[in-house]
Length: 612
Ligand code: FHN
Image (cartoon, rainbow, N blue to C red):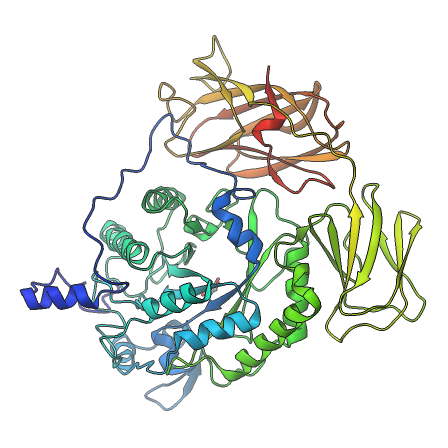
């Protein structure tokens, strides 16, 4: 049993003055009037999928902004990456230093009591993010060591009650005010895994920990109004044992969206799955292609540590930062790049300098258009010489290997389209565009515009599109059994096939959460005459036919998974579609996405689906 700290503080018996000071000192102004949290919808008939993160207004800013600043800052920062043991040996780590250096609890608490980030300058941090072109910030509110960076009322292991810091300050409130003033979104990282709370480690007392965790998250949402919650520490672990489950994640998502339906949440709220939260979180890596069935954000360190480590000078170059960002944006992802402030709260100058250089490239010649609001284009294949992102009817070819004089850059087209103009951003040089083989040859007539990357903006005439459809959705027949047996219990018209039933939901209040099935029928109407990729996210089974041909056959019961099939469709034509879906036990999901060279990945929209 981990008994690291005095048990969480019981509600303080505050006198009037104490209560008044507590109200005045709470973050973000007077404490929100106590109001009962709205009761989240659960139970049979509930579908927890309220929108398509790929197209929802709720996620629009996140999908446009592309580039964010991660900040790892906590009690561990006070050690600056080094701990000298009583025997004089030195142990090194950053945010894991308590664990990796086996620091005794009392020694870690003793050092935390000296933590005084007096030089934490929220305005300077926000300015550094803006100078870098980072349009949102995610700061650790509580890492695995359990130390809260705001004046939580749930325990005394926090920056207000256990530090040498000015008790009248609140760095999260300061950062919120500075971010709002600068038009930058603010999110909070929150570790589920908690090395400090004595109730975390024991399954018997874990519910008490969860109660405090929910209360802390409510404090963060109510007092700071974050745009995003970035969970971590969801994995199965020992010392302390981490019993966080998929069901815990499902319940927490429901709770959070009852607090604020606009919140964006990452997939580590659950167990880092395709159905958890709004986006996937590859770490220290860049996926080779768009991720099926989920938005994604690649998070990385700027050196080799998340938290501050005074000896770590292995900084990424501005060129690496920009090229990573271009690759990520061209595959439809976001880039969350980290800084680790030192024990005084200062962001290391080498971080600020490199980020500023990256921002300078983004601001030069409008090159940021290759990132902000840009995304994956299925029209062309990823070239060997750089990355290509699409933004409306412009393709941004970011060239990191400029060709020798007179030599072409080849672009492989996946679908017939025409290029109506080509211009190197920041240069007046002519670019010759020649149809060649399976695409085009782009031949510049001058030099690269710089050592990092040169951007050629190609304005294209995309493949013809049929007008938007007038559909209202597919006919959905659901049975209270998983064999489609007997007359359907309920028949509806579903605007989309976008179902997150999780553990408690079902198609109708009359249908239990387990052992049910749904058959969707009707027609699907593409806007382009192209080869479409249909992607399902399902649990437990799915089979999908187009015009009577079986395109997806995933009939072996499974957990949440993606399956894909391709089919050539004709613009404006209504192709028959049938989907047979079964839920047996446990979680239940069924989502239908499509994509094509001209269509980025999305839940198939209502207007392109017709009942039948
Ligand atoms: O253990 C943490 C680590 O300290 C850091 O916070 C990263 C950032 O995403 N997440 C976990 C490792 O995956």
